[in-house]
Length: 188
Image (cartoon, rainbow, N blue to C red; front, side, top):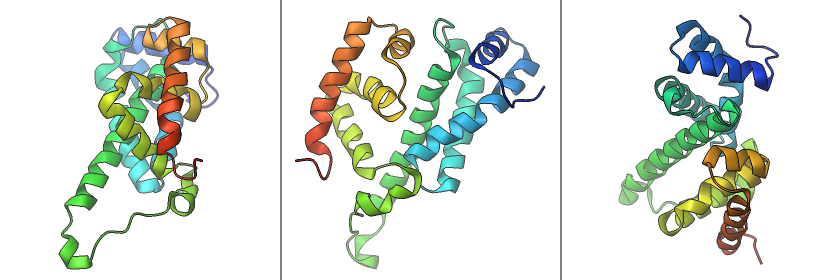
């Protein structure tokens, strides 16, 4: 089975079979979604090796947690969330390791300018920091906001994935944008 050129319906069919225990379908599914999962991870992590590590984590999570996919929405929407969460976890680990470094050994760590350091992969470090800040007090806004504004998923697909009314999703995105705007560098 080639992973090239599978459409959303074919991926969903593979996912249903994989969720029902078909190991061959799971292998085909993982091969089919790997490029998309890597693209999601590269949208968060600017260095390819970091994104590849996060992608591997995402694929492992997909394989072990496929039973939690409800099957109501597109599998690729669920996969986006799994990959996004894996990339954000990798980002947190790297940030915590950088903060834990001895500042006396190398001098104080300077915060990179996201307008120059993050263009490599089309991500913005200030966006990641803003999502971390919002998530502390308003976690319900982060996932819908990222799925809509970063990954461009349609509102109705996000609503199906979150099992929430369409109006609720639109309101969460709107409120998330209001919270994120003052946290982003370059915002006026």
